[in-house]
Length: 257
Image (cartoon, rainbow, N blue to C red; front, side):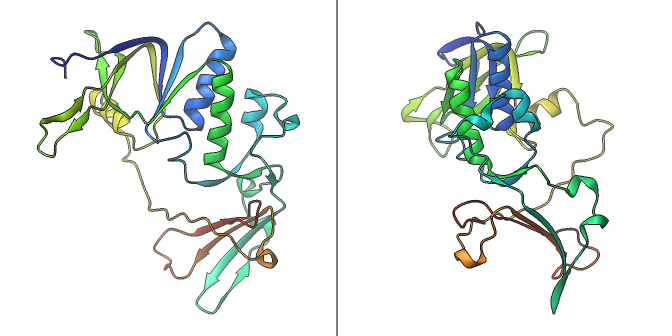
């Protein structure tokens, strides 16, 4: 990619990924030093487009990052947890485990049920209000290294590449975003993260990563079936005792699960 002329932009900090980690980092950096130039790249068409998860969130991090958020009307933490249920499923039904038998981390008292997409959109408004530049629709395709082997920037994906790899009539080279610091917040299986793990041999002598398949859906249920604040986990049937797995149901606002 070195023989392609690219536009280049200089920043103090370049952050890849507008998830909770990337946006929180951007906010904290501007809180510490408003003069810093901070940019966040997001591959999705908008912030939150690739954050499809419902979640139960401990608000301690938000309390420290944005004190006073509870007095604001636009925050996404609308549904406090009201009940924790733990079910063991069998082919003919289920039974509930007593909460006293569950580990402390499964106690969600004081937590909130949220859409992480909405949390990210809200954090993005906070970041932009502090002067953070957010570029949605730009995927970081590769890294820039200096002669010492340190990361000094990222390059966004080229546009107009044909299926055979040649440059089509609409070809436009990606931009180079250079930073004194580059934060990679694109997730556990991000393409740049995997490049860095390989280059710096971060996986050598480590246990291999373990991954599972997760299926996520957003349901709108009948009002009589909706219990705002209910957190329900289950395991067992149809899985056997040798296969790990289970399910979760989080009842949000607006009859959504």
